[in-house]
Length: 156
Length: 119
Image (cartoon, rainbow over all chains, first blue to last red):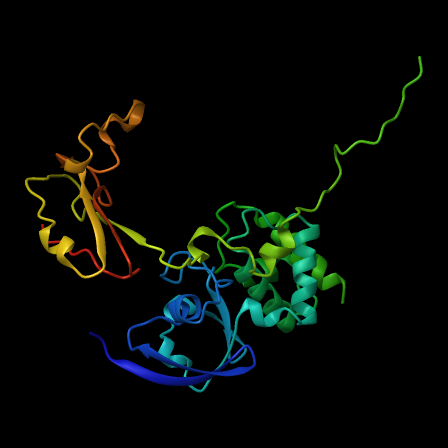
């Protein structure tokens, strides 16, 4: 079948080794090989942002990244951010402001929103909107999501 | 007349019970579940916008290792969709009317056994 490659990378702070087919996406590796299902498979083509993870600190659509390209990198998923104070603040704001509906886009939204706040501690609504452009919510509740991110920013 | 003011939920913001679990990625959606012995289904869809189905040969698909069942419209002899679904039965037997119309489905032990289009 396809070529398998051995890789080693840091996943949520822990060194992991995996043997992955060369054509496997990072998302499939995270979900199906490593069992971290907090990262969601939405569209598989970089449109929706449900699969957002942090790679070396940057937000990446894991469906568009090959698993082999995780080699030597630092990958952080929603599961690995449970103890992160900023992420926790965003999660609480999402809950308090009704920004979670079906919840499928939420892990990706939370990661992306936390990244926005890391770069812009006091963003205006336009900045939040621009930052969340790559994350689609099919319940279409964007107003409350933006409210939540703004509220999380105010709490600093 | 005296108006009795009662405790009311109307107009109050009630946080969703399952929101924290969803926001932390812990919620298990159907495709997050992987039970022992679980089987995976997959649907073969039309690649043509409008075409007649003359013949479907599923013998090779059935012979693939790990495949439990392959079905087509022929396996559902009495599809009776109602209303707007009249030209949209679960599996199309005579004709496909759009790209993505369902033609065949299989269930297998692996998630990735591919159904190959040959039409």
